[in-house]
Length: 347
Ligand code: PEP
Ligand code: MN
Image (cartoon, rainbow, N blue to C red):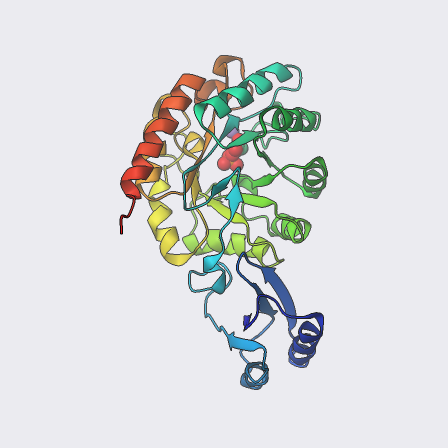
Protein backbone atom coordinates (compact mmCIF):
# COMPACT_ATOMS: atom_id res chain seq x y z
CA UNK A 1 0.00 0.00 0.00
CA UNK A 2 1.48 3.33 -1.08
CA UNK A 3 0.92 6.29 1.23
CA UNK A 4 1.56 9.57 -0.60
CA UNK A 5 2.86 12.73 1.06
CA UNK A 6 -0.05 14.74 -0.37
CA UNK A 7 -3.82 14.16 -0.20
CA UNK A 8 -3.68 12.46 -3.56
CA UNK A 9 -1.23 11.83 -6.39
CA UNK A 10 -1.32 13.63 -9.73
CA UNK A 11 -2.19 11.69 -12.90
CA UNK A 12 1.51 11.71 -13.89
CA UNK A 13 2.56 10.32 -10.51
CA UNK A 14 -0.09 7.57 -10.72
CA UNK A 15 1.16 6.74 -14.23
CA UNK A 16 4.72 6.50 -12.90
CA UNK A 17 3.88 4.14 -10.00
CA UNK A 18 1.60 2.11 -12.28
CA UNK A 19 4.50 1.61 -14.66
CA UNK A 20 6.87 0.59 -11.87
CA UNK A 21 4.53 -1.99 -10.31
CA UNK A 22 3.59 -3.34 -13.78
CA UNK A 23 7.23 -4.39 -14.21
CA UNK A 24 6.65 -6.68 -11.22
CA UNK A 25 3.28 -7.99 -12.44
CA UNK A 26 1.21 -5.74 -10.12
CA UNK A 27 -1.47 -3.08 -10.57
CA UNK A 28 -2.49 0.04 -8.64
CA UNK A 29 -5.94 0.55 -7.11
CA UNK A 30 -6.67 3.99 -5.57
CA UNK A 31 -8.79 3.87 -2.40
CA UNK A 32 -10.38 7.24 -1.66
CA UNK A 33 -10.35 7.75 2.12
CA UNK A 34 -11.81 10.75 3.94
CA UNK A 35 -8.33 12.12 4.72
CA UNK A 36 -6.25 11.05 1.74
CA UNK A 37 -6.25 8.67 -1.18
CA UNK A 38 -4.03 5.65 -0.72
CA UNK A 39 -2.86 3.34 -3.48
CA UNK A 40 -3.17 -0.39 -2.98
CA UNK A 41 -0.68 -2.56 -4.84
CA UNK A 42 -2.71 -5.40 -6.30
CA UNK A 43 -0.62 -8.52 -6.76
CA UNK A 44 2.41 -9.91 -4.95
CA UNK A 45 3.81 -6.78 -3.33
CA UNK A 46 6.72 -8.41 -1.54
CA UNK A 47 9.42 -7.76 -4.12
CA UNK A 48 12.12 -5.74 -2.34
CA UNK A 49 13.32 -4.11 -5.56
CA UNK A 50 9.83 -2.84 -6.35
CA UNK A 51 9.41 -1.53 -2.79
CA UNK A 52 12.80 0.22 -2.92
CA UNK A 53 11.98 1.92 -6.19
CA UNK A 54 8.62 3.14 -4.88
CA UNK A 55 10.13 4.31 -1.60
CA UNK A 56 12.67 6.31 -3.58
CA UNK A 57 9.98 8.51 -5.18
CA UNK A 58 9.91 12.04 -3.76
CA UNK A 59 6.11 12.12 -3.45
CA UNK A 60 5.81 8.82 -1.54
CA UNK A 61 5.69 9.05 2.26
CA UNK A 62 6.02 5.33 2.88
CA UNK A 63 4.99 1.88 1.74
CA UNK A 64 2.85 -0.07 4.17
CA UNK A 65 3.45 -3.78 4.04
CA UNK A 66 0.77 -5.03 6.37
CA UNK A 67 0.88 -8.81 6.48
CA UNK A 68 -2.81 -9.39 6.83
CA UNK A 69 -5.35 -11.25 4.74
CA UNK A 70 -7.35 -8.01 4.78
CA UNK A 71 -4.73 -5.33 4.50
CA UNK A 72 -7.18 -2.50 3.69
CA UNK A 73 -9.66 -3.41 6.44
CA UNK A 74 -6.88 -4.06 8.96
CA UNK A 75 -6.83 -1.76 11.96
CA UNK A 76 -3.23 -0.86 11.09
CA UNK A 77 -4.22 0.33 7.61
CA UNK A 78 -4.12 4.01 6.75
CA UNK A 79 -7.89 3.72 6.20
CA UNK A 80 -8.32 3.48 9.98
CA UNK A 81 -8.79 7.26 9.95
CA UNK A 82 -11.62 6.97 7.43
CA UNK A 83 -14.97 8.17 8.72
CA UNK A 84 -18.27 7.46 7.03
CA UNK A 85 -21.58 9.20 7.39
CA UNK A 86 -25.16 7.94 7.16
CA UNK A 87 -28.21 10.17 7.61
CA UNK A 88 -26.20 12.95 9.24
CA UNK A 89 -24.47 10.55 11.68
CA UNK A 90 -20.73 10.07 11.57
CA UNK A 91 -20.22 6.43 12.52
CA UNK A 92 -18.40 6.20 15.81
CA UNK A 93 -19.47 9.65 16.99
CA UNK A 94 -23.16 8.95 17.56
CA UNK A 95 -25.26 5.77 17.62
CA UNK A 96 -26.70 5.04 14.16
CA UNK A 97 -30.12 3.42 14.06
CA UNK A 98 -31.42 1.96 10.82
CA UNK A 99 -35.00 0.75 11.14
CA UNK A 100 -37.88 -0.29 8.94
CA UNK A 101 -39.72 -3.21 7.49
CA UNK A 102 -38.21 -6.57 6.64
CA UNK A 103 -40.30 -6.59 3.49
CA UNK A 104 -42.15 -3.84 1.64
CA UNK A 105 -45.65 -4.90 0.63
CA UNK A 106 -46.12 -3.60 -2.93
CA UNK A 107 -49.90 -4.01 -2.64
CA UNK A 108 -50.11 -1.88 0.52
CA UNK A 109 -47.54 0.92 0.17
CA UNK A 110 -49.18 2.97 2.90
CA UNK A 111 -47.91 0.57 5.56
CA UNK A 112 -44.39 1.38 4.45
CA UNK A 113 -44.98 5.13 4.31
CA UNK A 114 -46.47 5.03 7.80
CA UNK A 115 -43.63 2.84 9.05
CA UNK A 116 -41.12 5.28 7.55
CA UNK A 117 -42.69 8.24 9.37
CA UNK A 118 -42.90 6.20 12.59
CA UNK A 119 -39.25 5.10 12.58
CA UNK A 120 -38.18 8.69 11.96
CA UNK A 121 -40.36 9.82 14.84
CA UNK A 122 -38.86 7.08 17.03
CA UNK A 123 -35.38 8.50 16.38
CA UNK A 124 -33.93 6.31 13.60
CA UNK A 125 -31.65 8.13 11.15
CA UNK A 126 -31.97 5.67 8.25
CA UNK A 127 -34.78 3.56 6.81
CA UNK A 128 -34.58 -0.09 5.78
CA UNK A 129 -37.02 -1.79 3.44
CA UNK A 130 -36.77 -5.16 1.75
CA UNK A 131 -37.45 -4.96 -1.98
CA UNK A 132 -36.02 -8.32 -3.11
CA UNK A 133 -36.16 -11.02 -0.42
CA UNK A 134 -34.01 -14.13 0.02
CA UNK A 135 -36.54 -16.68 1.27
CA UNK A 136 -35.81 -20.17 2.54
CA UNK A 137 -39.14 -21.34 1.13
CA UNK A 138 -39.11 -21.00 -2.68
CA UNK A 139 -42.90 -20.54 -2.69
CA UNK A 140 -42.87 -17.68 -0.16
CA UNK A 141 -43.15 -14.04 -1.35
CA UNK A 142 -39.82 -13.20 -2.99
CA UNK A 143 -40.19 -9.43 -3.03
CA UNK A 144 -41.01 -7.24 -5.99
CA UNK A 145 -38.97 -4.68 -7.93
CA UNK A 146 -42.04 -2.37 -7.76
CA UNK A 147 -41.24 -1.88 -4.08
CA UNK A 148 -38.18 0.12 -5.12
CA UNK A 149 -40.46 3.03 -6.06
CA UNK A 150 -42.17 2.77 -2.67
CA UNK A 151 -38.79 2.79 -0.91
CA UNK A 152 -37.67 5.91 -2.78
CA UNK A 153 -41.01 7.64 -2.20
CA UNK A 154 -40.58 6.97 1.54
CA UNK A 155 -37.13 8.56 1.29
CA UNK A 156 -38.64 11.64 -0.37
CA UNK A 157 -41.33 11.89 2.30
CA UNK A 158 -39.05 11.50 5.31
CA UNK A 159 -35.64 12.63 4.06
CA UNK A 160 -34.14 9.45 5.57
CA UNK A 161 -31.46 7.64 3.55
CA UNK A 162 -32.63 4.15 2.54
CA UNK A 163 -31.14 0.67 2.76
CA UNK A 164 -32.19 -2.34 0.66
CA UNK A 165 -30.75 -5.80 0.17
CA UNK A 166 -29.41 -6.70 -3.27
CA UNK A 167 -29.04 -10.34 -4.27
CA UNK A 168 -27.59 -10.12 -7.76
CA UNK A 169 -26.00 -7.69 -10.19
CA UNK A 170 -29.30 -6.64 -11.74
CA UNK A 171 -30.55 -5.57 -8.29
CA UNK A 172 -27.35 -3.59 -7.72
CA UNK A 173 -27.87 -1.65 -10.94
CA UNK A 174 -31.59 -1.01 -10.31
CA UNK A 175 -31.00 0.06 -6.70
CA UNK A 176 -28.16 2.44 -7.56
CA UNK A 177 -30.06 3.92 -10.52
CA UNK A 178 -33.05 4.53 -8.24
CA UNK A 179 -30.79 6.34 -5.72
CA UNK A 180 -30.68 3.79 -2.86
CA UNK A 181 -28.10 5.08 -0.35
CA UNK A 182 -27.10 1.85 1.34
CA UNK A 183 -26.82 -1.58 -0.29
CA UNK A 184 -27.29 -4.52 2.05
CA UNK A 185 -25.55 -7.83 1.44
CA UNK A 186 -27.60 -10.50 3.19
CA UNK A 187 -26.37 -13.37 5.32
CA UNK A 188 -27.02 -15.85 2.52
CA UNK A 189 -24.83 -13.88 0.10
CA UNK A 190 -22.20 -12.76 2.59
CA UNK A 191 -19.59 -15.02 0.99
CA UNK A 192 -20.81 -14.73 -2.61
CA UNK A 193 -17.54 -13.36 -3.92
CA UNK A 194 -18.76 -12.58 -7.43
CA UNK A 195 -21.60 -10.48 -5.93
CA UNK A 196 -19.16 -8.78 -3.55
CA UNK A 197 -16.91 -7.94 -6.50
CA UNK A 198 -19.84 -6.68 -8.56
CA UNK A 199 -20.91 -4.41 -5.68
CA UNK A 200 -17.33 -3.22 -5.19
CA UNK A 201 -17.10 -2.29 -8.89
CA UNK A 202 -20.54 -0.65 -8.93
CA UNK A 203 -19.96 1.58 -5.88
CA UNK A 204 -16.29 2.36 -6.57
CA UNK A 205 -16.94 5.87 -7.85
CA UNK A 206 -19.84 6.63 -5.49
CA UNK A 207 -20.29 7.42 -1.82
CA UNK A 208 -22.81 4.56 -1.40
CA UNK A 209 -22.51 2.66 1.89
CA UNK A 210 -22.58 -1.15 1.97
CA UNK A 211 -24.04 -2.97 4.98
CA UNK A 212 -22.41 -6.39 4.94
CA UNK A 213 -24.17 -9.00 7.07
CA UNK A 214 -22.20 -11.80 8.67
CA UNK A 215 -22.63 -15.17 6.92
CA UNK A 216 -25.49 -17.37 8.05
CA UNK A 217 -23.27 -20.18 9.26
CA UNK A 218 -20.74 -19.39 11.94
CA UNK A 219 -17.44 -18.57 10.25
CA UNK A 220 -14.23 -16.98 11.44
CA UNK A 221 -13.94 -13.26 11.97
CA UNK A 222 -11.22 -13.13 9.31
CA UNK A 223 -13.64 -14.61 6.81
CA UNK A 224 -16.17 -11.86 7.66
CA UNK A 225 -13.64 -9.03 7.42
CA UNK A 226 -12.12 -10.45 4.22
CA UNK A 227 -15.57 -10.35 2.60
CA UNK A 228 -15.59 -6.60 3.30
CA UNK A 229 -12.10 -6.33 1.79
CA UNK A 230 -13.51 -7.66 -1.50
CA UNK A 231 -15.77 -4.60 -1.76
CA UNK A 232 -13.31 -2.02 -0.43
CA UNK A 233 -10.51 -3.20 -2.74
CA UNK A 234 -12.38 -1.60 -5.67
CA UNK A 235 -12.00 1.86 -4.15
CA UNK A 236 -14.99 2.70 -1.91
CA UNK A 237 -14.15 2.20 1.80
CA UNK A 238 -17.74 2.74 3.07
CA UNK A 239 -18.43 -0.77 4.32
CA UNK A 240 -20.17 -1.52 7.63
CA UNK A 241 -19.96 -4.95 9.28
CA UNK A 242 -23.29 -6.32 10.51
CA UNK A 243 -23.39 -9.29 12.89
CA UNK A 244 -26.90 -10.77 12.75
CA UNK A 245 -26.64 -14.06 14.59
CA UNK A 246 -25.33 -17.31 13.21
CA UNK A 247 -26.54 -20.86 12.73
CA UNK A 248 -27.01 -23.29 14.44
CA UNK A 249 -29.39 -21.33 16.64
CA UNK A 250 -29.33 -21.08 20.39
CA UNK A 251 -32.38 -23.08 21.43
CA UNK A 252 -35.31 -20.68 21.50
CA UNK A 253 -33.73 -17.93 19.41
CA UNK A 254 -33.79 -17.71 15.61
CA UNK A 255 -29.99 -17.76 15.46
CA UNK A 256 -27.07 -17.79 17.84
CA UNK A 257 -26.76 -14.14 18.96
CA UNK A 258 -23.29 -12.82 18.10
CA UNK A 259 -23.27 -9.18 19.19
CA UNK A 260 -20.48 -10.28 21.54
CA UNK A 261 -18.03 -10.46 18.59
CA UNK A 262 -18.10 -6.64 18.35
CA UNK A 263 -15.02 -5.99 20.54
CA UNK A 264 -13.16 -8.78 18.72
CA UNK A 265 -13.95 -7.22 15.34
CA UNK A 266 -12.84 -3.86 16.64
CA UNK A 267 -9.46 -5.29 17.62
CA UNK A 268 -8.88 -6.43 14.06
CA UNK A 269 -10.53 -3.83 11.85
CA UNK A 270 -11.41 -0.14 11.78
CA UNK A 271 -14.76 -0.88 10.08
CA UNK A 272 -17.87 0.31 11.93
CA UNK A 273 -20.06 -2.42 13.42
CA UNK A 274 -23.85 -2.15 13.19
CA UNK A 275 -25.60 -5.07 14.88
CA UNK A 276 -28.91 -6.51 13.64
CA UNK A 277 -30.67 -7.81 16.77
CA UNK A 278 -33.87 -8.67 14.85
CA UNK A 279 -32.51 -11.59 12.81
CA UNK A 280 -30.28 -12.61 15.69
CA UNK A 281 -33.00 -13.44 18.21
CA UNK A 282 -35.90 -13.50 15.74
CA UNK A 283 -38.71 -12.50 18.07
CA UNK A 284 -39.87 -8.97 18.85
CA UNK A 285 -39.96 -9.61 22.62
CA UNK A 286 -36.22 -10.43 22.71
CA UNK A 287 -35.02 -7.70 20.33
CA UNK A 288 -34.68 -4.78 22.82
CA UNK A 289 -32.35 -6.72 25.16
CA UNK A 290 -30.20 -7.86 22.24
CA UNK A 291 -30.05 -4.28 20.93
CA UNK A 292 -28.85 -2.97 24.31
CA UNK A 293 -26.32 -5.78 24.62
CA UNK A 294 -24.93 -4.85 21.19
CA UNK A 295 -24.39 -1.25 22.27
CA UNK A 296 -22.85 -2.44 25.55
CA UNK A 297 -20.42 -4.53 23.51
CA UNK A 298 -19.38 -1.42 21.59
CA UNK A 299 -21.52 -1.48 18.45
CA UNK A 300 -21.63 1.75 16.44
CA UNK A 301 -25.21 1.19 15.41
CA UNK A 302 -28.27 -1.02 15.18
CA UNK A 303 -30.34 -2.29 12.28
CA UNK A 304 -33.82 -3.10 13.60
CA UNK A 305 -36.89 -4.43 11.85
CA UNK A 306 -39.93 -2.30 12.64
CA UNK A 307 -43.46 -2.08 11.29
CA UNK A 308 -46.34 0.21 12.05
CA UNK A 309 -48.56 -2.88 12.39
CA UNK A 310 -46.31 -5.95 12.64
CA UNK A 311 -49.18 -8.44 12.36
CA UNK A 312 -50.05 -7.05 8.91
CA UNK A 313 -46.48 -7.32 7.63
CA UNK A 314 -44.80 -9.74 5.23
CA UNK A 315 -41.62 -11.81 5.58
CA UNK A 316 -40.20 -11.58 9.11
CA UNK A 317 -42.31 -8.64 10.22
CA UNK A 318 -45.15 -10.46 12.02
CA UNK A 319 -42.62 -12.28 14.22
CA UNK A 320 -39.75 -9.93 14.80
CA UNK A 321 -40.64 -6.34 13.85
CA UNK A 322 -40.95 -3.86 16.69
CA UNK A 323 -44.08 -1.70 16.79
CA UNK A 324 -43.35 2.07 16.90
CA UNK A 325 -43.65 2.41 20.70
CA UNK A 326 -41.25 -0.46 21.40
CA UNK A 327 -38.85 0.90 18.79
CA UNK A 328 -38.88 4.37 20.35
CA UNK A 329 -38.21 2.88 23.83
CA UNK A 330 -35.42 0.68 22.49
CA UNK A 331 -33.74 3.57 20.70
CA UNK A 332 -33.99 5.80 23.79
CA UNK A 333 -32.46 3.09 26.01
CA UNK A 334 -29.79 2.28 23.43
CA UNK A 335 -28.78 5.94 23.41
CA UNK A 336 -28.49 5.86 27.21
CA UNK A 337 -26.28 2.79 26.90
CA UNK A 338 -24.24 4.61 24.26
CA UNK A 339 -23.82 7.57 26.62
CA UNK A 340 -22.53 5.22 29.36
CA UNK A 341 -19.98 3.81 26.93
CA UNK A 342 -18.97 7.22 25.56
CA UNK A 343 -18.83 9.62 28.50
CA UNK A 344 -18.30 13.23 27.47
CA UNK A 345 -14.69 14.08 28.13
CA UNK A 346 -14.14 17.35 29.89
CA UNK A 347 -10.76 19.00 29.52
C1 PEP B 1 -33.16 -8.98 6.20
O1 PEP B 1 -32.43 -8.05 6.57
O2 PEP B 1 -34.40 -8.91 6.11
C2 PEP B 1 -32.53 -10.29 5.95
C3 PEP B 1 -33.03 -11.18 5.11
O3 PEP B 1 -31.43 -10.42 6.68
P1 PEP B 1 -30.34 -11.61 6.73
O4 PEP B 1 -29.67 -11.59 5.39
O5 PEP B 1 -29.45 -11.21 7.86
O6 PEP B 1 -31.10 -12.90 6.97
MN1 MN C 1 -35.91 -9.83 7.65
